[in-house]
Every structure is written in C-alpha cells, then in structure tokens.
Length: 113
Length: 115
Image (cartoon, rainbow over all chains, first blue to last red; front, side, top):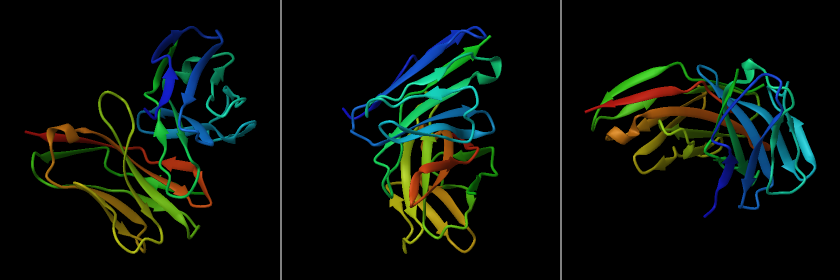
C-alpha cells in the first residue's frame, strides 16, 4: 500500500530534550516536506526537500532540523524543544510535478512541557 | 508571495443539502494549482480535488466540485448532498506550477453536517 509513515503518533516531552520524528514514504517520491498545524493558522511549512541531500527552509524553520540521506526518509529533528513547538506535525510527499497532490502521513501530536 | 484565505472558521449544513466553502487566493504567477483537503476528526489529511489555473472547466470529483473564478481569484469547494461523514476540517491550498512543492494552506473551515 502506498503510504507515508510517521512515528510516533503521540509524543510528550520536556523542554530541551532532543527528539526525532521519523517519516518514510514508499512511493519513490522526490519531494518531501514537513508542516505544523496550529488552530487558526492552518498548515505552515517547516522544511522541504526536492531530492536526496537537497533541503530548504519553509516558512517556520526556526528550532527544527531535517536531513534527506535517502529518498524514502525525511526525519524532523528538534534539538532543544520548547513549549511553543507543541503542535500537530505532518510529513508529506509528492512527485513534485504539476498537479501532484501531497500525500500526508497520519500526523504526530507533540506536547512539550 | 502567495496567500490563501478561508474566511469561514465554521459552517453548518443540513444533511442532504449542498454547501459552499469559500477560498480566495493571491498570487502574481500565472501558472498555479489549487487543492482542497479534508481532515476528519481522526486527523489524517485527505486530498479531495485539484484545479489548474489554465483549466477551462471547473473540476469535479463525485460530490465535490470546485467553483473556480479566476478573475475574482476564488476557488470555492461545493459539496453536494451533504452526508454526516462530511463533518470535518477543510483546507484550501495553492501551489505554483513551476514549484508545486511550495504549497500554501488556508486556515481551514470546520464543517458540521446536521442530521
């Protein structure tokens, strides 16, 4: 089954404790991205990657890191999480070509206390 | 820079009736695509429908249709014959054709279908 897999689904952590949210897609998509969803703000792009070893900042990259060492994986790293990073996070992928919709993972709800 | 605006935080509709969810956009690029996604209470994001800026006809997918008015920069989603399962958040999004990867989302509209 074609899918984007995110883990974990839920995560509660404390301020400053490094964490990684994993994302993997099995559709051979070149493009992958991370979004955060906050009430009233919709989805805002954190980082995206056009291909292996190619990443770029989105609208809200501060406090986040990403890497794209393999085509299928695009982990999101929070080196020192803070409470304002409490949010619902989505990983997404697409072919990157015209008309191609994003395929989303099921989301990771992160709480930083 | 692109911008997407959804002005209806919440909408109610009676079961079996049609409902229109508004979406306006702003871009100076002539080539772009407009998308609608549904997010049920379970949280996943589901792609519903797509409209390209050069498409002559409004897109349709089953009970979903997109009322595309290019001059007014609007791309409203019309859901016909609403069902209880249509209750969800709906997001409008836009991507530029030369860089469809830079997709921008509106704030969303929460639709509630009443029995």
